[in-house]
Length: 141
Image (cartoon, rainbow, N blue to C red; front, top):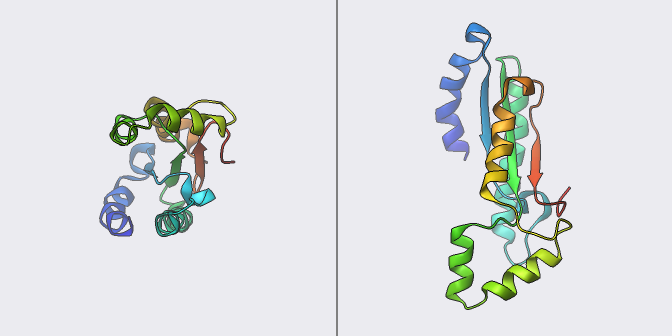
């Protein structure tokens, strides 16, 4: 992620402030960046590092103007998720077990994650930077 940011940031900085515009960067780790993940410590640690990068890059570039934020999806009903569960013959068990632990009692949708990203890119959110927003039905706060 840091390599991507290093290549993208000069272009974003060049566009920020032009004609009243601001530059925006939104990264999408997962909620494991905030809450950890049972049996997946290495991935959770790497994702938590991404959140540290988001906060630092946000502070370093706020004056550009540029916003840098993260959207952290919790359990999300995607085709890939279903294919993995189907391959193990666990679709019903996996999804019912997961939803019991989520206060909203359902998985998120890719559209809800996309809507959160869209929100962060809207003109009215220019004062929101360095944040990690969970899209998790209340699972992670």
